[in-house]
Image (cartoon, rainbow, N blue to C red):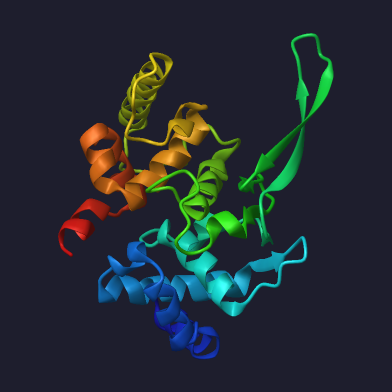
Length: 258
């Protein structure tokens, strides 16, 4: 960062930094964010401040959003890019928040070319080059809609990272020093193993929704990487290693240092 960039950064933060009382309130509600050290918390506060300046977080369905709610969403989302850059959330501008699960309508073309309209009740959704949509009832502090370790905000924003180079498919744009074949081998083998366990009716340590498709596998594994790093490391150590390279973070070490 050159001198001009540092001056602009300092000027921006003097005007738009998340107020300390809001930031401390957010940290107090999140065991996940409390694992961060002082330097990481400082970096996250800066990223979240920029996020709130660049993205509109708006309510739908008669919900009234508060500053505390907006800061909560921004902090959770920016944890994913703590050691990356806000540019990873470029190309879209809005987060829409419903009070509860919402109905999404999608068109599906069958093998005969017939178009079917499907309706699904969702807790969250990410659109390519469009908004992230969240249900506050499942995204608010302390809620784990799919059991211990689930995090709707991390899940939907992980889809956004996956979509940076096209439709979500479990292959986000990797860093130059990463190996595409190593990534593909680690995730495809883990995905096949998980699906085999689920098809056999076995118990799995990971949210079974990860077996839906490779895109959901990436999003669920991202949740697990941050929320339950020891579970991912013990279940799929090569996936943990690849995620560590991609996110440039080590949540397991962070957890063990508490």
